[in-house]
Image 1 (cartoon, rainbow, N blue to C red):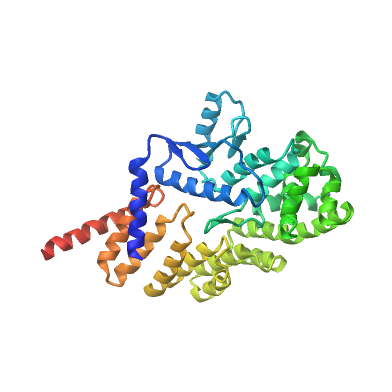
Image 2 (image 1 turned 60 degrees about the vertical axis):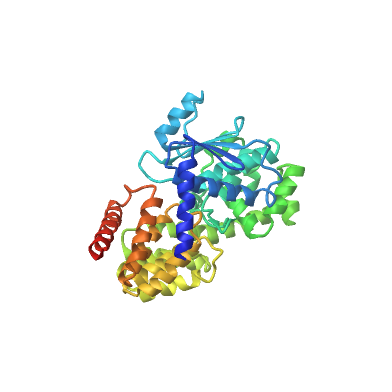
Length: 422
């Protein structure tokens, strides 16, 4: 295991020494970025995995030329770059320029919040839509990008679509409960301006593709839309139901699966643990296989110090290694055993998490916890090696300077011990 970790470290060092300036090339992308090369590598592997999963499965082609990604550090950096390239657009999170086959995005918003990789997937989906569909309406283009981008993660090279987007589901539920009625007959002929102005427009569009995915009809519908167009009758023909019946079924789906995501977001927003648990349990009542809600409940019990109950919620997630929550659940399981000073079991689950962290931007954090486990197990040499791996892979040392300072001190302590023995 340790040899494998050190081999991975060697690969990272090779990337660092071979990177030329601020331009990075991969099979389907050219990335211009001033971010740390280690983070750019994370961007590359995620983008390529998403591209490979989409091409052939949902889309016939990704176009002939590579996609250019301008990945800046901050939102203001992206604004400046857009203006420099002659664009008046403002990208709060990201923007796809179809004529250039270029994506403009950044790591942090103006408020300093980190933007998730799903934002990049959203824009790559726009690229696929442009390459595969002729004059798609805005609801189709945006709804599909929101569905494939929002909440999607890469697990062992595979994408994990088919999840509620908690933020969007809160907005959708609020509008519906205030009397706005989602209606496909109204959605389909909408112009871009009308879609923007309709309170449920984008979120309802995403819900449609989410429902098609859960119904097993998404691939077939995309093929039919490509060949026959975007009229309501194409959807009716695909699912073999009249539009009025589809509307009823879609609304019932929203009130179950999408509302589950809304409850999840309410729980995340709440500052009271009791309210958090209540919201997560409501989400699970609507969507019993909602692993994100189970993970959040595990976090609740972990914060209380009830590690046994925490693990009871994690066990079910760990039965599904293909899920987007498996890695997080394995790491949390490791933390629960670490708190109980069961370092052998903690290591077992940290290693499981590490195995599923190839596309995870904070993979380096696992090396820190593993190093500490080896320290307490009195394997000081391995602890030192892993603290070094943590330091060498940590592309954002400002995030937790205490861990960085400790890992650096550990190197000196072990070196001092070694010299004293000599």
